[in-house]
Length: 275
Ligand code: SF4
Image 1 (spheres, rainbow, N blue to C red):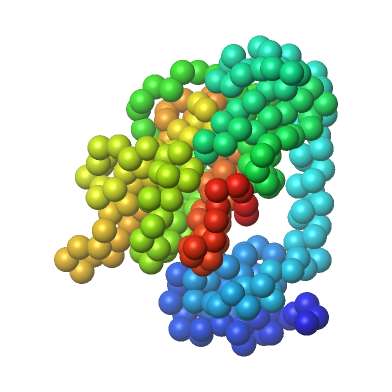
Image 2: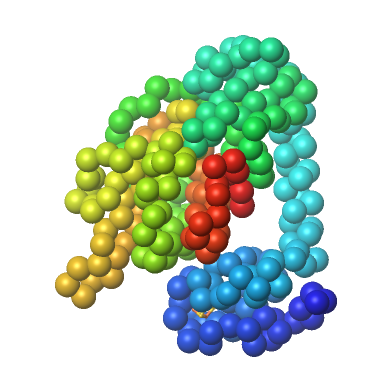
């Protein structure tokens, strides 16, 4: 089928309940955002697979955004050529052998060589590549403090929090509400660790998207007419070890990965870190 010519084509396929689960006030606003490439069609949890596939093809705006992203990644990869990867491995909590720095990303080995080439036994996407490069290039490698802070408490986190909440926490909360295996998958597939309940949550799981960048996912079940909620917390060293922009990319990519996983219930994720 050809790409949609306008937002109305997308709108016609939506639920039209204006439920706001996608973070937009109306289905029409969501359709407009998808058409402009500001939202992904799968952020509406009420669509079937065929509709998601139909509108997942990149439009022009998305394509130009992706070109910008490619240029940024290329620039970061060039900077890697000037980095001592042996020293970077120590700082980043990884290891160096055969000319490659290897870091654990959600429990999987992802390596980079001195020319900026990535290698892994898994498929990796830009939401992993960009933060990985920033972590290696600019991270200070401070030891994890064990003190958890919210995204808002990080430097420049307050301004970016509304979007982070929509793109990451809300998406993950919707997944957690409906996909009962979410936290099991986090532990068993992505090497997460269930920890004592934090901040009076019902479930708390710590994941390591990068060795010195732990992320704690806390989920509160619905209770007494109050709907469920989900928040992410970061170690207070996150500012120095990676920075809020890369955390945003990681969080949003991470949420999309789990949203897709929940839609494809039963799909094997053992060998992928997909979008
Ligand atoms: S989540 Fe889907 S149905 Fe709900 S407002 Fe957004 S587009 Fe409409």
